[in-house]
Image (cartoon, rainbow, N blue to C red; front, side):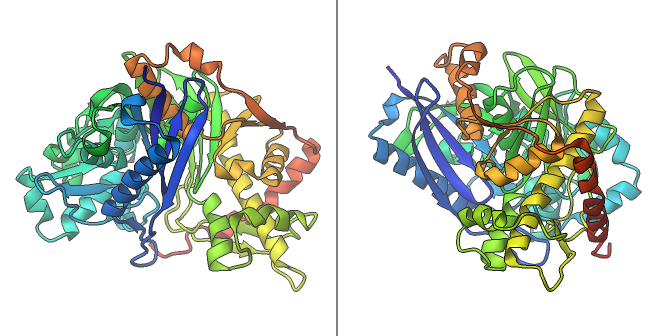
Length: 495
């Protein structure tokens, strides 16, 4: 009797492994951070070898700590940072360059050229995305154009491209399986979400050989078996981290919405089996493919959310640990008219300005570090509110609640301010490990460990509901100064 599922949660700043029992409870977890590489302003990289070594390390750690054996694990699910691009040699398995991270802005010029070439309509129609450095397609093109010999090797079929899920499967199977799922493929700007295949027109325009790309599978099926210390475990679930969180939050029906507060913030609405085209600069994306059907979602992405708390800790050094920010922010009654726009990596939805940069507005002699802490948290919530308004306009509905998860959702001050700003309840899941849960459940469904979607949906429970505590007039008075601060951050860097 196999008693557990194993979830690999490969994030932007750390690699994690979690063991889950049949009730969806986390029985053991291990986590290791890895280096963030900033070669120059606006560039963000990771070492793919370190991604793998930390991920392999936490798998060993979680098994050792729990006493669970590989033969006790029914299936392994993978969830991952999505738009980060890795290119490696098919024979040696060696990366040809560092992973270019989703936050990286180096391809802004190429994206501008694609817009000048009139490709915005084509890209939105086929991929559901906007043209932006966020997505991995232009990152692959950059590697091929800037790493000596890479393009020639790619054209000879010697190189493989993948998002982080593909890289992990390749390493877990000792280089025998090259695969991705539809949710990750839909984040490349190279995948036609209706035809459900790589698009030759976009591949040609970006100069990416089709031979580099992995076959695209569903999100819940057996892709192969692990080799090495965890040999024999079927790899059976893959979903990008935000789609996995949507599934783990049990947002299985159209109209349900979740927001994850992690390094960035990511709000997704389940739109069912029909992709909804955004009129308000949101993304249309694949949520998952399960049981022969593709489920779609509308998505809004905030690039910097929890990362601003890391900046308060590491950059400004006004807190010693991230957990201190709530107490510090709560020590003042309001932000003291200080606004922080955390556009450190440009602005995502619904603004899509890669040339925006962070702004701190409204400082006076009376401003303290407590005001900065509070303004930082409120800056996260304001960005989320911008997305929710755009999502309601696209969907033509007024949301009745927002389900939340992610590390920063444990900050009660932030969650209460978010509810006040939105005017709807903000409901925090009791088990905030929804990102890992989603991929684990997808894997469990593939091998029959999980009996049905309805059965796993019964495992979801709320930890706390934050109810709005201010009037509509007070809520309306909050936004104008945020909008003024936002305007000052835009187009800061010259194109």
